[in-house]
Image 1 (cartoon, rainbow, N blue to C red):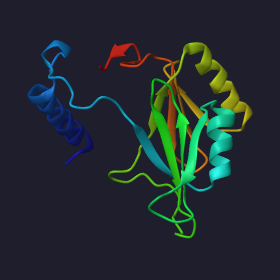
Image 2 (cartoon, rainbow, N blue to C red; image 1 turned 120 degrees about the vertical axis):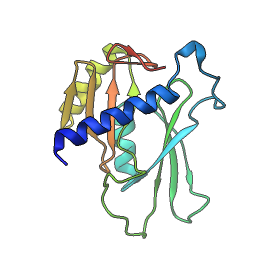
Image 3 (cartoon, one colour; image 1 turned 180 degrees about the vertical axis):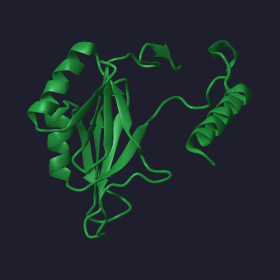
Image 4 (cartoon, rainbow, N blue to C red; image 1 turned 90 degrees about the horizontal axis):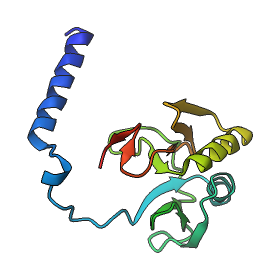
Length: 166
């Protein structure tokens, strides 16, 4: 199968799924969820992670405790606004490998920030020597200290690149 034929096939499948499942906002049922409590990631080093997320990104550390499921491991949380937290675990002694994208893994986490904050954070990332990729004048993609994919976006919650997604 030629590459373009495969792309056409994937587009047709996406269109079929949208036709079958996607509904305008007024026709969708209410969600059974009330919001994201936290997203939990695994980090290489607690101090390095706190320095990056609180120091560079300005997301306050809100709690730090021993992981109840693994003695010696730390479970800690950052405030990412709107009542949401980003959590991390370290798992010392388990010999975990470097970050890789794989099925079921985190591709990236996107956090919405006000435009003025976006510009300041973009510069703080550059000043910290973090490699960034800017997209559409409103998104900055980068990697956290353990290789995790991150994005800050200046679009408000529920919108992306000017389009409504919620």
